[in-house]
Length: 592
Image (cartoon, rainbow, N blue to C red; front, side, top):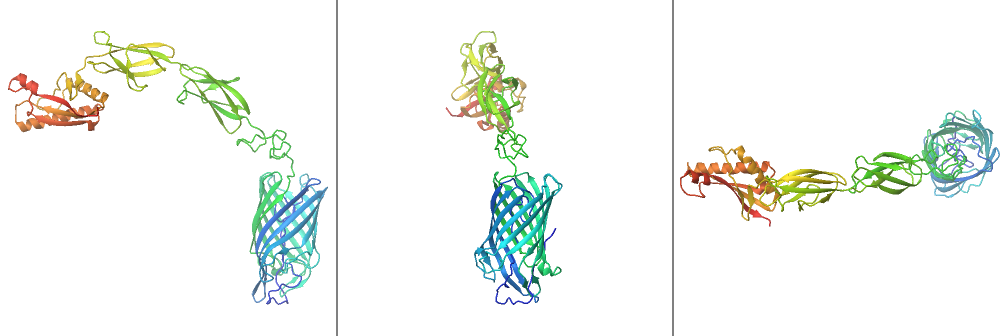
């Protein structure tokens, strides 16, 4: 339902910027006690002896602008900052109230720059039908305006003014409320050039939407008015739309605000309006358990919510989800571990729900000891309890023998789960349960590998057979006990040399202090010297490529072919040829 307003003058001259005597263009007053709307009154009756107070600050742009028949505009009030102070008290079905506008600053041709008071309103509302128990709500309202205005601008009456209104509202759903006001207002008669400003009918309609009960709501409103003696004159039918919100900050503190605009150019319809207010408005619904959630939406009105960022809106304290993890000393989850808490139990990573309090958790796992911890649960959307278990070690003995089964007393071993350095063979070593890759070595023997499975609280013995080494390291070279064989006049390595070169690669990998190795290729003296040198270079490159394929870093190897230039034994016998046809390994650079 809509409300109508006022407009322009009939026979008065505004050239001097003075407002016509008796004109009051201030039409907006925020509702004293409406819950869901800013301007439209509702019928809701507060509890007996309910007292409230609030203040609303707003700014209106061009709220009182006069437009003559010739189109000339006079901005009597081009802008105004206004604070409305309101208090109210309920006795039975009747609510009494006071409302005083304070003009902080006005702008315009009619005494712009003023500050002062507006007209004090004495307000009363009688609720005849309670909408919470009846199909609709019905109330009657009235107010008397005392001429207390202290400003020259047309923002107050020179004599007593009055309003009477009927208020009807209905809750369409739990979230939607429709409210309407229709009333009449008595004001002094003012003759303007194109309008007679006198007693008026006003209409207001509002639609409220509750986003969260007793927490947050939105509203949309429209208001208008018209003069009894001139219904059809658009200058006297101002229409204004308004969008608003309310937000209950605490059970007693309410924040309200909104913005609106004039929907036509009638006198009293502003270009735009913005507002923000704060009020002491105790909730109409009780909160017995004091958790800030009102009883009408509190599923547990006598038990306070635990406020732990987990389902805090229902008003009931919730059990906290607790996940129990069982880890080892390095923080890794222990496979197969189980835990218990009272009568509850589960595997590592499983959860249970607990109320706030202190609890005892125990855990155990195969190959691990048991552990019990105390944990305080203080609530939340999820809590993790971590129980650390110590490993129960086993014992490992590594022995080394030669191919005939004889023990090698000076052999040492290392494995992949300990820092290198070596352990003496034949001596029991404490080790955590698990699989181990072993590396066993001894002077004069090739380094060999093996595996061991250590079992908790058991002793395991592993024997590794070492074979004599074909590769030895000296200060300046790596000596090999055999030759590297190639196909005749080719750089293709024969398979019978793979085992020897594998041992060379293993030796280099085990000795990173050998920074650079020079692989030298040599031939006998048969054939052309240039061809022999090229063949020796290609053979040295082939050996380098093979070693790189076995894991030796390429930058540690260089290949040089000398052909027949460096024979070990002169002469042309088969024995000399065999001895001179060779591959040598020299230490070109070492870090130690």
